[in-house]
Length: 296
Image (cartoon, rainbow, N blue to C red; front, side, top):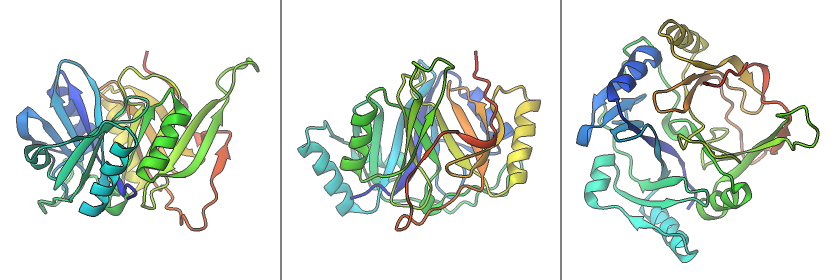
């Protein structure tokens, strides 16, 4: 019943035109008009991977997590309900809007919204980047990863492990203050039933937008560098300079989105063999680079 991958995310926006320009011109994503006024962002042959939807706020709505088939979907939702988690079954119209066979909704212990689904729908329109991106790394690895706020860190971690079948990839313990009385920031990284190093990370603090960042992975370092140049030229806030992460090896930069969270744009992430992988504890987030400049 393990979740296979991160299938999509949903985002609320007060001005979809800002997202359209940012996604297409800076990041090189394809754009399309979705149902109910939504803006769909494509990075592969799925109809969308990011759904930007009209709203009265800017921020994260939910993450869509893929189950392998109908049996896994039924087993997962039944297990959640039996454990006292409030699960709502989506309608046939909900599933059709998301281009899946069935969908259900719940929240984790930190209040983050989840959409559980099964059934991949493709329209087989090839991905053609408006900015010449050679392609994104998706397939069975999913769309990338999300980093979610989880003030109730251990409880939220246990929910994803015990209820949804996530495994532990590693953790970070980052010193955030010169005061030795301030404990290091503990970040937990978790993987699905795929070989992406992590599809989920949990950070023990509230985040106004509801999402710390989401990551998309491109095929080449040149794709990363050219996107960074476009973001800088367009005046988008660069939240972190180019660098390589210590745990998943991703070479990436971070840019602020119109939704109040960041997108990590990277390449070269490792794909562990989980049968031999030993989770580690990293004391630094990067082996080089990644100079942080949070948006004020």
